[in-house]
Length: 153
Image (tube, rainbow, N blue to C red; front, top):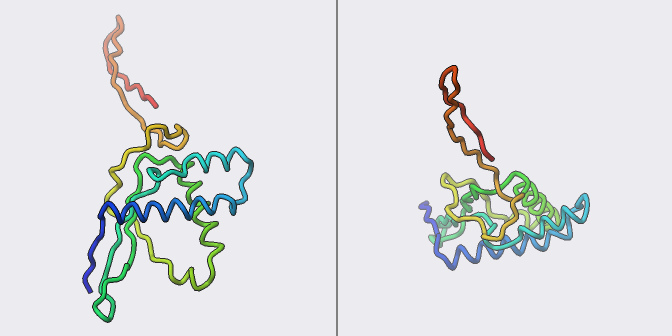
């Protein structure tokens, strides 16, 4: 069996659209702690916030290609809070599926590479991962000199 990857723009758009549709439909299924949490979830349900997936095909017993798995490329800028919300939505969606539909779900594995996509321009700050930037500043005093790190968030 050979494995081939499909990363065409049309196919990628289709996968993002499917994922966004599933998560949007699950918005009403989750038991949110309050309306604020539900509003935050709705705020990040946009196409550009869906992780990238590559379809991995293999030949079936008849030699026809079929999707064997999806390799998910994580968004490096995604905050822990956003990951938690997406996980809740995905869990709620899977929970409402029939037994047969659950059996037909294609396996998703984490890809070796991260997504290169940037966050949307108007994306909320809480949904973005904090990054630490270490800047070294000179600490010169009359008693001597030294270098102290200054960590910015």
